[in-house]
Image 1 (cartoon, rainbow, N blue to C red):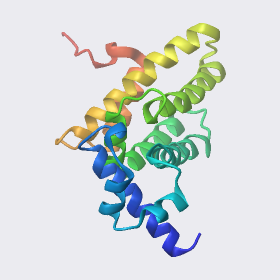
Image 2: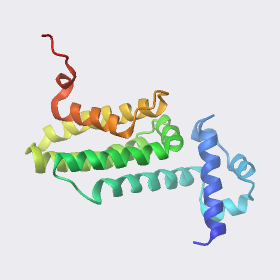
Image 3: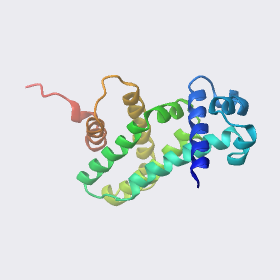
Length: 188
């Protein structure tokens, strides 16, 4: 893809993310996007069918990148899981603005649902291979774990205390391995 096409796609994506901060996807018009991106409508249609196509493209690119981080070095050792989780969290933090905006949509067929599906496949595979948890139990535990992780990450991105990716990875790993009991303070 040449530089002009890359630039056009980039400014359209930025315009959509900016618009999503103010209103729902169904209220955003192509005219508004084109004005903000300073391009013609015909240029928009040369790249995307409609606003939903543009949104889907953004979501799919982010999920693809996250999936690459998860599957490129499929870990079986806890240390490897921790390092991979830090890399994934760094990617999410580097894309904080777009991830927060897309998570706020709460469309279970959109970004939130795509993340759930991707993570579900990864976690269920891990349950089966590492913990020997199978069937419905693996599915239920995966759903519980993923929902908690997504909301934890969303809260982290909104937080001004700015815990590090390693801090959040530690919280996720402790809860996943030992539940809330891993945070109990000794009463001695």
